[in-house]
Structure formats: structure tokens, C-alpha cells
Amino acid sequence: MLNVYLFQVLNGLGLGMIYFLISVGLTLIFGLLNFVNFAHGAFFLLGSYLCYTLVTLTGNFWLALVAGPLVIAMLAWALERSLIQRIYHLPHTFQILVTLGIALIIQELSIMIWGPVGKSVPTPELLQGVVRFGNFAYPIYRLFLIAFSAGVAILLWLLLERTRFGALVRAGSESTEMVSLLGSNIFRLFSITFALGVGLAGLAGVLSAPLRGAHPFIGPEVLGLAFVVVVIGGMGSFSGALVAGLLVGVVQSLMTTLWPQGASLMIYAAMAVVILLRPYGLFGRA
Amino acid sequence: MDTKTGAVASKRNGATPLARPGRIRWAPGTTLAMLVVVVLLPVVLPSATLATEILIFAMAALACNLLLGYTGLLSFGQAIFFGAGAYCSALGMLHWQLGLFSALLLALGVGAVLALLVGLLCIRRKGIYFVMLTLALTQMAYFLAYTLSDWTGGDNGLLGVPRPPIALGDTTLVSLASPLAFYGLVAVLFAVIYIMARRITSSPFGSTLLAIRENEARAAALGYDIRLFKIMVFVLSGAITALAGALYAMLLNFAPLSNIELLMSEQILIMTIIGGTGSLFGSLLGAGSIVLLGDILSAIWPRWMLLLGVALIAVVIFMRGGLWGGLTSLLQRARRASSHDKEA
Image (cartoon, rainbow over all chains, first blue to last red; front, side, top):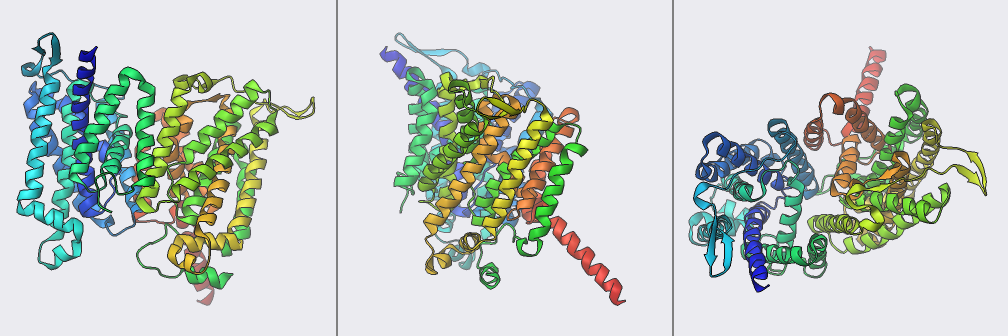
């Protein structure tokens, strides 16, 4: 019995790391650019489909893991340059509407390319099978998922805390004007951050593809969950996204054994309660 | 009153409204135009069912417009009211043998009460947090409906929703079994709601809503109780949306789970925006064109929703007024051209 719970907690950690990767991009973009990206879930979807295509074409998951997020980041860069940059100055309402439009376009294009039925992606050969600890067995791919995303989280933390780029992002989140006045090219910073944030959503999509496959209508669901995590963790907070992501993942995973239908209900209720009682999130600053 | 709305509609800092309602000059014209459209729809369209669907969504878009276009509240919560209206009226008819008007009244009541609750909660937050809250509540409503499958039928939807006749006591006056008869009922309800909404929006109450949309702090400084006004709009909008939901269930004889989905909120929002925010006639245009487009294209090109995405972006970037805004500027240009001709 205890093993079942251990199994679910580990599953929850994996799920939580996926949630973290999606949400941290959303929260970075909101923090620095003060931009609400409703197309974030659609890029996750695109990541899963790119993984499917690259794996079926080349049979190499590792290529997909590197190329998938890069392609999506490049796409995001182009989109930012051509369209998103024009709407930074508009109120959030307009940003939501435009990105909703983008999400719709990506979703419909994906269906045109990959068809309306979901695709499954095989687990990479190297990571098939299970690891045994005594009488407890756990799939290798899920362990890899946790370890790999933890590595990405650490790299991301180093990038934000220890590099000049990270310092600019953090400073820009405080005051965009000041950073701009001090002579940094704020628009380039915006483009890079947008591409990075969206690329992370793509990475999450690639990583989750061998577990859940690629489904054309997953975008809104992913977006909803990302918002739950971002709101609970506090908008713009890196550590908040990590803790809240893991929390939501583990709670959701444990609930599936107890009361599966109630899991989502509770998660969104938690989101509403946090907005009402602590609008800056559990880890954000007031 | 003109000068007051004029003053608040003048330039503000930053917060550009979606579109400026051109309601004062066009007021009598659009009501007439609406009546003409309502009468012509079943004649022009191949089926009365399609016409009914257009008016039902126009009703929902109009209610959404009161929130978004007139008060500046972008809410993803409309599906809560639409879905609840459908479920409650259907359950009332199935389990309590409610008649037509009692079922519709029940939907109105449930919509108003739910909107009161949702409004009370959501207006405690502004901007992006307001949007997020409406989103969270819609998701909760969806998963609640999904969980309560004994009542709602869950994924399968609620089947066998009746369409009771217009009756007085036990005597049937008009059967609504034929699509055209049902269209008649929906058309009358839509026209009544449209005229009522037009009167409300051009009353001092409506001007205050615009003032809140344009500059909330200034409206508050003028002494208006912003919370009260926002809640009243929520209740109004929720009741109308729930009525639309109830009519939709009667039209389909079925209340699907998708009624209460976030996607339904998005769909209603898209109709409102593409039609033109801040114009009631725009909502009719938006709902009409999207339902029609869907009906024509879905058979030959199932991915027609792609166009909606493009249109949404185009409206925000190039044409804030939506279809209605485009139409009025065309009319104005034509009028200016013709007056030039006269001078020449």
C-alpha cells in the first residue's frame, strides 16, 4: 500500500516538473514583459507534435529533445518580432485576445498537419524498462524526466541569478524603464526572454510526449494548469513556480487514487482562493 | 447626458477601449435594423433552426457585450451561466414537469443568482487577476458538472430535453415543435432583450458603465459606487446568458457538457469582439457571421476556426470596432463622399 503512495508521489514529482517548465516560462514573460500569453499551452502542444515528427522521422528522441525546443524558441522569436512587440503597450485585455487568436491558429494548423486524432510517441530505447528498489519498481523514463527537468531548473536558476542576462531580466522585472535608461537594449531582452519562456513550454511538450503522446486539444488544459501554478506560486516568481508546480503535480497525482474527478475541481478552487486571499501568490511579494 | 459621456469618452491615458459605441447617432436605426434582420433571417436562411441558433448566440454575445463592451470587464465566466441555464431549465422540465415559461424563468433566476455570486467574488480583483478568477471559476463549474454526472449526464450530456408548448393552464396555445414556431419565440425574446438592453445602455446607468470602463478611478471619484454597478451588470449579463443557454438546450433537445466549458466562454467572447464591442447590433453581426460561417464551412473545411484566430488578431490590431465598426466607418465614408458630390 505504501508503495502505491510512493509511486504516486514520484509520478506527481514528474508531473510537477512538467508543470514547472510550462509555468516558469509564463511567469518569466509576465514578470519581465508584463505580458499575458494565452498561447502558452499551444506551444506545449507544438512541442509534443515536433517530438512525434522528429522521433518518427529519425528515430532519435535525443535529437527531438534538443531540436524541438530550439525550433519553438525560434518560432517564438519570429512571432515576438513580427506581432507580439506591437501589442506590449496595449492593456492586458488586448494581449489576451491576440494570444487567444494565436493559440487558435496553432491548434487548427496542428490538426491540419497531424490530424485530429492524438499521436503516441515511443519511449526512447535507452530509457525503456523499470528500475527496481527491492520490491518497488519504477519506470526509468519517469525518473529521467524528474532528473532532467531538475537539471534544467538548476541551469535556469544559474542563468537568472548568476549571469548578466539574468541580472537584466530581474532588473527589468522591477523597472523596465530604468534598465532601458541605463543603456541596455530592452527590446532585445524582451525578444530573448519571450523566446526562452516559450521554448521552455516547448521543452515540456517534448518531455511529456513519450508519456502522454500528442493531442491537438491539450492546449487549453495545459494553459489552465499553468495559470493555476503561476497564480499559486505568485506571478513572476521563479521559486514560486517550482514549489507550486511540484505541489499541484503531487496533489493531483495523489488525488487520482482517491477521487480522480475531484482533483481538477480542487486545484481550480485552490487557484480561486489564492487570488482572493493572497493575490500575489504564496511566494510572491506584495 | 451627451456632454457627460462625451467627457469620459475623451482621451484617457493608456487604457484604450475596444471600441467607442456609436450608439447616440445610430440608436433608432439599429433597433429597426435588428427587427428587419430578425424578420428576414428565417426567410433568407435555408433552415429556421440555423436562424434560431444565430439569435441564441446573439443573445449570449449581447450579454457578454454588456460586460466587456460597456463596462470593460473581460470575463471567461459566461459559460457558467450559459451551462447552468441549460442544465437547470432542462432538469426543471424533466423532474418537475415545468412549463415553458417557468423553465425560462428558472434559468433567468439561476443565472442572476450565480452571476451575483460570481460577480461578488470577481470584482474584488482587477485586471489580470479578475480574468484569472473568472477562468478558475469556469473551470470549477465545468469539473463540477462533470463530477455530478447523475444530474448532468457528465460527458454524454443531458439527453431528452423537452420543448414544452406555450400553454395556459393545461390548454396548449402554440406548439413549438416546428422549427419556425420555436424561432418565433426566440425572436420575440431576443427583440425584447435587445430593446431592453438598448434602453439600459442609453440610460444614465449605461453612461455610468461607460465611465467605469473609460476610467474607473475617475468614476469612483465622481461618487459612483463602482462595485454596485459592476455587480448589477454581472447579474443582468448572467441572467440573459442563462436564458440563452436554456433556449439552446430546448433547440437541441439536449444539454451537452460543452455548454459549460471554457471554450464556450471563448466562443461567446470571440463573437462579441468580432462583431464589435460596445455595439449591441455588433453582437448580432458577430454571432450571425460566425454561426453562419461555421455552418457553411464546417462541412467543406473543418479547420475553419483558423479564420477566427486570424480575425481576432486583425480586429485588435487593425479594426477595434469589429464588423460593426467597419460597417459604420464605411457608411460614414460613403456619406461624406456623397456630400462632396453635392458640393461639387
